[in-house]
Amino acid sequence: MELSGKTTLVTGGGSGIGAELCRRFTAEGATVVVVDRDEDAALDVAEEIDGTALIVDVGTAEENTRMIVEAEDAVGPIDLLCLNAGIGNGGGVEAPDESWDQAWRVNVMAHVWATRAWLPGALERGEGYLLHTASAAGMLSNIGAAPYTVSKHAVLSLAEWLSITHGDQGITVSALCPMFVETPMVEALREWPGGKGLTALGVISPTEVADAVVAGLADERFLILPHPAVAEMEVGRATDRDRWLGGMRKLQRRVLAMES
View 1: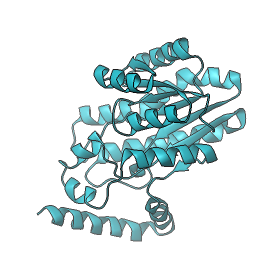
View 2 (view 1 turned 90 degrees about the vertical axis):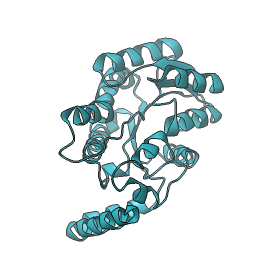
View 3 (view 1 turned 45 degrees about the horizontal axis):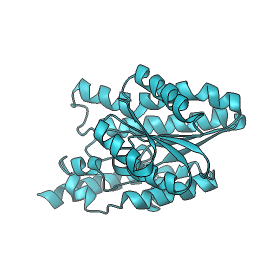
View 4 (view 1 turned 45 degrees about the vertical axis):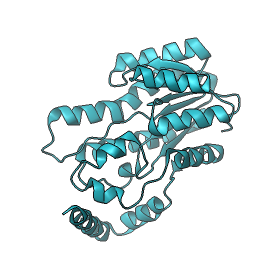
């Protein structure tokens, strides 16, 4: 996809990766709708890029439907739907139900609800592009963060299903799977058990992620991996799962030791 002249919508567009995607898409010649639940953040980014701001909490079906309707009323059909809003929930199976529910609603169901509202129009037009931010945690795992890991695996599976099901109907799908990016979410991750150790392994900037996204969209690649090491880790995981699990346990011991 060439972004010039296209209409895009970015959830979580008020900060972090989302804000940088809004800036970069605008620089590439796209019209951008900035969506965030933080009104000031959405308005600031929209003013900066001369875009349109929508204040939406993507954690409900009704809000996602409103988002698509109001965005397309404002700027016309959305060519690229970038579902980037996410929440990082730490803890394991002992994490409260509210934490699991929040991760499921924002990291998974928001993608379902937004796609449900957008897809009929895209199918009627015979074209459309979905970009799901799924995280490397969706391909691999995230130490100390069961709700986040499980929900990101689910959204990657959803993206794969959508590509299989609608790829012959003009719908292109990509999944963005970065590791650690300097965002408010990663700042919060540093407070989780092992989080400081994990982020010490390497953090890239949102600008680097945006560069990878633009290149991935141009090539229409399903997996967009700003950290090339993720592909190597995925190969190791697929070919020898027991060895990979042992390596992850070793990494967990290492990062926890870095904080002791």
